[in-house]
Image (cartoon, one colour):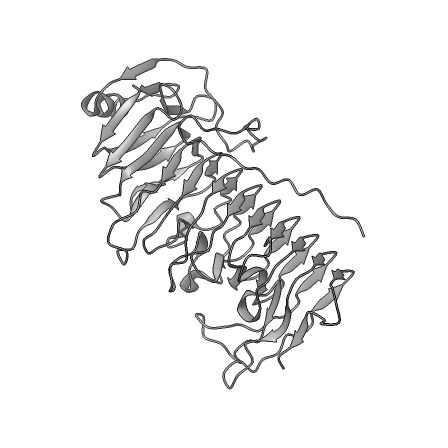
Length: 397
């Protein structure tokens, strides 16, 4: 069996504490590059910024002066072009601090935001960074890069918000650092609540998702793509080469709730729970590393729904069982409503290595409601390595 290269990347853009950062990845034609600038516009206060943003033209580079920008309701609603995007950047990456009641919204086309830090406060909105201005004005072909959100949590733990919400289509979120969310709500979410945000082809690449402590109830995901209401909708989001470090908010580290997504080349380190294919079909999980390092409740992938593929992953030192096992293939609900458990049908689980994992759970969740066992599915060409006489397989139905 041939294993693909695990290409995980740890990136930390916290002030003065950067590790070696790889070059920006190759990007599709839809992803804007740094422009051949028409104008460089330095701004030192919010009034100057809004004047520059309101009058921004393709190719403009708006540069925020280093320092603390407090209570900054930052908005960029403009249209660049693929050859000449509009950019907003820090004078020095990591030296522009948005604090207090600050947030960022971007809407329009071909925009690039880079080098900002959100710290010492929390958003007054429902999102810290939003790829939309409002319900009718979304972002397309735009990018947020080299930006930090760190310990920027609402002090009311039950108050729900999202640190990064992606709307629109063909947007990129790369080389960013998100760490320390304490209050309710996913750290990051891809929203599919309008047609213009579906079939989105977003890219979430080369980011560091830092520690998120146990939240204790639903609503502590690190990443969620879709919701149950849109679970039969195609998203087409690519999540690759990210590092999930001690992301333990709840049993779903990633909650996949839409179709056609790809999770490739990511590392999950000491993270409780699983990458959960909770809703939606036709998702690919390949070339990821799930390293529990022996920490409690660490898991791998939980499979639900139709035509899911889990291949060429490495599962190592995972201690979780039941819903947090190294591999969990669920029972479904007959004729399931959209928000429950659809039957596993046509899953392919192949060419993976399970190295010293506590449990591989088959037909998990079997009870009076979940009686639809997995069908038409294949578990083949996997290597299972263990110690002692206790086999990891558990069949619940």
